Amino acid sequence: MSVNLEEAAEHPAVAVDIETRPLGRDRTLKILFGILIFVVAIALPFVTKSFFVFQVTMVMIYAIAILGLNLLTGFNGQFSLGHAAFYAIGAYTAAILMDKAGISYVWTLPVAGIVCFVFGFLFGLPALRLEGIYLALATFALSVATPQILKLSPLEHWTGGVQGIVIMKPDAPFGLPLNQDQWLYFFTLIVTAIMFWMASNMLRSRTGRAMMAIRDNPIASRSMGVNNSLYKATTFGISATYTGIAGALGAIVVQFVAPDSFTVVLSIALLVGLVVGGVGWIPGAFFGGLFVLFVPNIAESISKGLSGAFYGLILMLLVFIMPTGVAGFLALIRHKVLRRGA
Amino acid sequence: MRDVAVRFGGIVALSGVSFDLPSQQINALIGPNGAGKTTLFNCLSRLYTPTSGDILFEGQSILSRPAHRIAEIGIGRTFQNLALFQNLSVLDNVRIGNHCRTRGDYISDALALPWSRSTEKEIDHKARQIIRYLDLQSVMHRRVGDLPFGTQKRVEMARALAADPKLLLLDEPAAGLNHGEVDELGDLIKHVRDDRKLTVLLVEHHMSLVMSISDTVVALNFGRKIAEGTPAEVQNNPDVIAAYLGTDQ
Image (cartoon, rainbow over all chains, first blue to last red; front, side, top):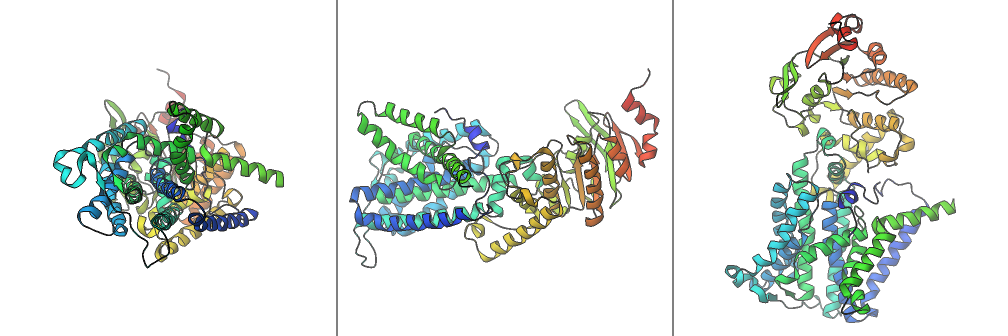
């Protein structure tokens, strides 16, 4: 990957907040676009095949996980190659609660969120002493360790060891006329909408500005009264919460957790999704999710034996065409169109 | 400022510097490069901890406070080489200046709860007021990093003012400005002091600015105070002249 991470975090593709931009034709377009997305999102599970519905559900789940990483890296300037660990903790929390305690899948999400917040916050404390590439290495270690810890025999009673845990797919509640895949799609859609709504509120407020201030200039942010340490550790916790809730949703949708689904490869996939979507741009997470889910499949359909090579090729092409991710690419197009219109 | 000393390893950056800042006056800190002016500033904003001595603000020692709790007692600052939040808009930079005057938490902000919204309104109102005051409306939504240097300096001033400081520390505000801009800056500093009833301490190399706006001047050299008084007194002090022009051995 030829992307300079430090540079990417220091120069987020979309910097100036959306809310304060001058309104006008842009706004009408935005509303129309919003309505279109809404209609497509509602209609999609009724007009496409079950497997595609499942795939789109997974795209949303990855989008939540990538959003979590974006809060940390894109908006707070901390790196992580360890987010597969939080995804795994979320997934296992959900699976164990459903399997051992018989708790409803709905309630596993907040629990997974809280558990991951605690882990993330605690990991964020020692991470305060590490910057940039060193933090990336420390979090990389977390990713490497997690699958092995999940396989440990003392934990096997809970985690199912190498076998993992199989869980049941939930039915649609209240007698809704939806099959399981359709229901999980809508359930995920609601959770995704809430998570993105909360993130966008947060980033537009005092809290989000403090996060971005730390990213841009930690010395100045301290002088403005921002408690850098507390914000950085809390952001780590929140980021882990997002990724953990995504993990829990993933476990419910896939109906299965196993240690080897959560290796460092997943961490890197999330980071790739982040960069492809656009560092520091909220909707970028969706494009990242699309990439994470579909590009490996596309690569495989081109050549089974060389799928990795084609994946690399597609990635390189994308980075070459859109060096600042989809975010920067769209901003560029918008700029060109607006200039032509003026 | 009482007997403040700072040592970095074996290097003495400041030794036994004491002076008072009369309130609502413009005080200047001068001295050749390496005299310890910025070190002193960093002690005042608690980015450095003095090796010995004490710094009192309104009768209270500030040394027990961490750097992020200095703004809330009313000490605001700007930086020598600009320390703005480059990727944020002017408006957001100024809003962050108000951080220490407001309260909030992740959850209320994420859920946009009523008190969070009203805090936002308050911050926004305040920020826009200061932006108008410093005549930055036309660039309010622009990314700070894209603005010319002189404008960025005004943004930094706006950000510092958004915290309602009682003591404003300006680290070389005139550096990099042209003649006309320096004159404007002098007027602005005086204007701000009068309007907002604040005490100003500025570090500055630009002597004509220092001499024209300061009420008192403190001169440092090699980490020691060599003179203190009105601009005229300091200007005629033989030690100051020697420090700036060199002495015949």
